[in-house]
Amino acid sequence: MILALETSCDDTCAAVVSERGEVRANVISSQGVHDRYGGVVPEVASRHHLELVNAVVDDALERAGASLSGLDAVAVTQGPGLVGALLVGVASAKALAAAHRLPLVPVDHLHGHVAANFLAPRPFEPPFLCLIASGGHTLLARVEDRGPAWEVLGTTLDDAAGEAFDKGARLLGLGYPGGPALERLARAGDPAAFSFPTGARVAGLDFSFAGLKTALLYKLRELGEEETARRRADLAAAYQHAIVEALARRVESALAETGLRRLAIGGGVAANGALRARVRGLADELEVPPLELCTDNAAMIASAARYVPALPFPDYLALDAYASGERGL
Ligand code: KG4
Ligand code: ZN
Image 1: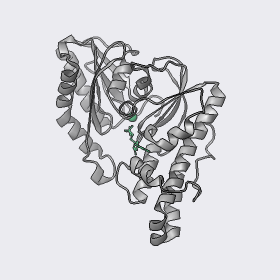
Image 2: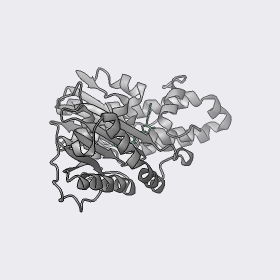
Image 3: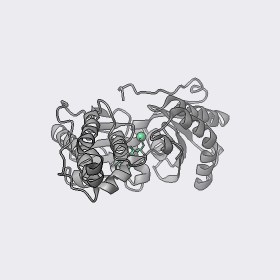
Image 4: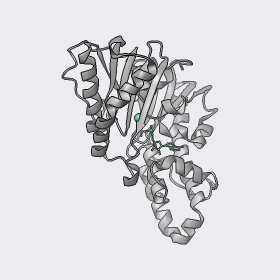
């Protein structure tokens, strides 16, 4: 049994997962406090992690009917993410593991998103193409096995896909996080009403979303307040269409280039109905883990930990977090 902690951004998460990938508990405490700032404030996030982490761990253990002494290992997200937020998880995991002389498994957050696919009851087996699109990352990966050595095929050069949703939503006067609100508004609109850039000029399999946000800003200025108010749904639909196209076209190219026939999508943006509909049928099989495993959670970290070497006590006492990954993500 593995206890995992995930505190890389604004969700304080703990989970208990068995060696076979059965999720015994998956506790996620979303901080909510960032909504009023229109985004995550790193210092606020760290402070809230500190306040919440012990209760979240206790809750996960209790729900799983597990005890610290009965665990095989403690796993934790080492990076990438907000460094202050990560440190709370890393320090807590070290303390919990050391107190019981347990091994510690440092996990890369993105390996976690990939490994959400390996959980029971229906693990999705490599090889497959994996698209991870969230508020913090946009990544296309070729996954050949369950370990952390997957190949990065493409990543974003500027904003993440979820960030593009959030920034567009903000320009349209919607709350944070903007993705779900923008999707709701877009349902009443025409995606062909406006034409927004899809980052098509970016070479290879990388993404770029910064120009899209600027294009929306200019369009709003051009339309003026009244016209914007009247056409908000069309604007949302066309903006969402541009993000979905940017993602889906890279997925199509990546499938063609790699010859992979199976596709998994994850990250918060995988909740988007237009994206799901657009990528359905591109590959022979499509895997979308349940939403609570697509967004940041600790069950995916425990899942990844099963394929990462554990550090025995006391080798991990000096373990540090990293803000950005070796692959520059
Ligand atoms: O994976 P996640 O919960 O946290 C991060 O690691 O960032 O992803 C959150 C992101 C936010 O940017 C949010 O706006 C976006 O996912 N999101 C959506 C939808 N639901 C969440 N974007 C588009 N459509 C949605 N339905
Ligand atoms: Zn994430």
